[in-house]
Length: 217
Image 1 (cartoon, rainbow, N blue to C red):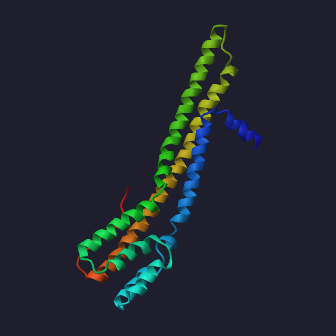
Image 2 (cartoon, rainbow, N blue to C red; image 1 turned 180 degrees about the horizontal axis):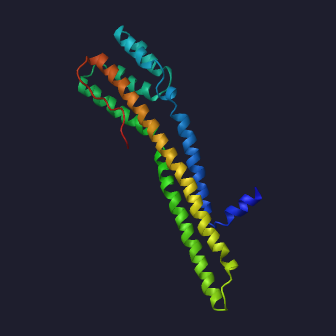
Image 3 (cartoon, rainbow, N blue to C red; image 1 turned 30 degrees about the horizontal axis):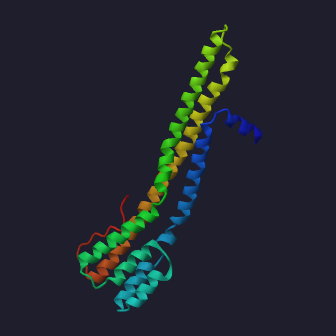
């Protein structure tokens, strides 16, 4: 462990923000993985229960099903049940507004992972630049007193190489994690849209409808 620390320390002070970025990205990724579990966002059978309650003329049962478990889909469908007597266009607008709100909650912090994925390689590049500056400083300082000792240039070269590698090693998987979270979020939003459309059609007939519970913010 001590050897690893000493090796990373050769990267210089730029390794500190690089390391912090990796910790933050990992924490966000794990938290969002937990929050974006399909059963938590889209409880199985919820749309069927709401449709059945509405078909049986029992909106209270449909509303109870929406509130049974706290979920994004339940909160969207709750709007449909509560405002079921509104005109179709107005109800659709209500669903879209609520859906955008829920979509923003699902995407909370996800963009931060994308930002870190972009910053990490740049931080590595910054370390490369500062490392090379140290190398040239050593060259200038030692050339005034004779031949340049390659050993004296080692610290700057190590800093340049290690920070570049660290920035890429962290940045690449972080970008993959960001794309994974975005893909999962989009799939959940698509299924939420389908569920909301089914309930809207149940309430207002089968006229063409496009309910967009969420979009990118």
